[in-house]
Length: 70
Length: 165
Image (cartoon, rainbow over all chains, first blue to last red; front, side, top):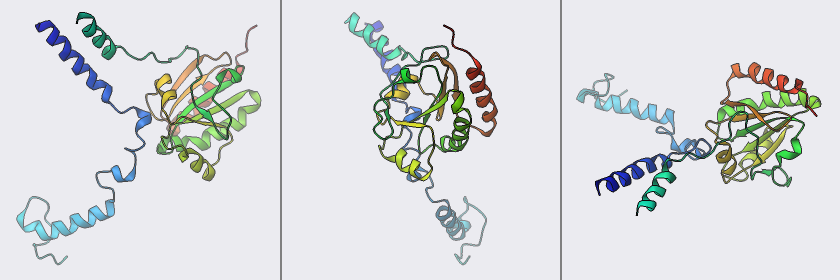
């Protein structure tokens, strides 16, 4: 019985390899909206504002003093 | 129970038979541009064929197109032909792209992904250089600027080979 359980486990383990995305199926993944930062300019602006406002709390950067004026 | 488990094991662990170098190239269900019917590689016997898998979302594929077009136009009289199979899942993507950036070589589309599966495409773009006898002699993965000379050299080498009998 242990052998069968092991066999089923191996089957399930190996079946995960069938879930990979083939090179020719990456059309949707290549779309702009699938990027982690779809709009780099917008992300940079948000990061700058976040830095300015949150710098005093630390952890993200050193710009500004938390006044939000730059 | 035994048989079922063994079948499961075999199913999940067996690799799909892939076309490798020195294997005979086979036709696949790709549709030729402008109602040209299904791709039939038999029609290209006697020619050196560069079978290219590409997609509109693949930047290196698009980068290779001007080079391939020039190479094809330069060597077409010697019996060289390029067949580019678009693997875009959207049926019109390739044709809309080609309207803007036309090429002289043959284009086919396979929206189902059966052709790249048969050829076991490992990268985009992937190209299979087929000799005059229909044998895959060289598989080229990806495309970089430095690959141009190598591709040209291999095509010219195959063109210089004579068919026996």
